[in-house]
Length: 65
Ligand SMILES: [Zn+2]
Image 1: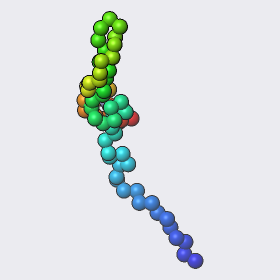
Image 2 (image 1 turned 45 degrees about the vertical axis):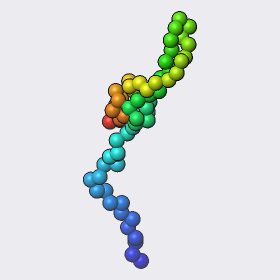
Image 3 (image 1 turned 90 degrees about the vertical axis):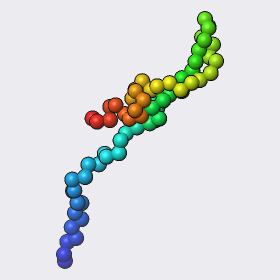
Image 4 (image 1 turned 90 degrees about the horizontal axis):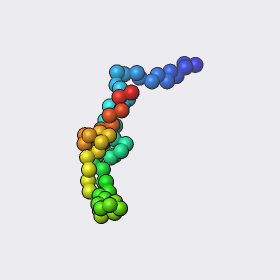
């Protein structure tokens, strides 16, 4: 009885080829931040701000572990 060999082909293909998106902005590069004005820091609205984690690139800076 011939034994069936379940060989997993180990080609030189790296498993993680897709770029990991930034966990903070989820790849958009911008984050919605609340705009506060006045002495009591009243929230008047939200505006898009540059993501400080990836600095606007949208990629996870800690991806290459
Ligand atoms: Zn980001």
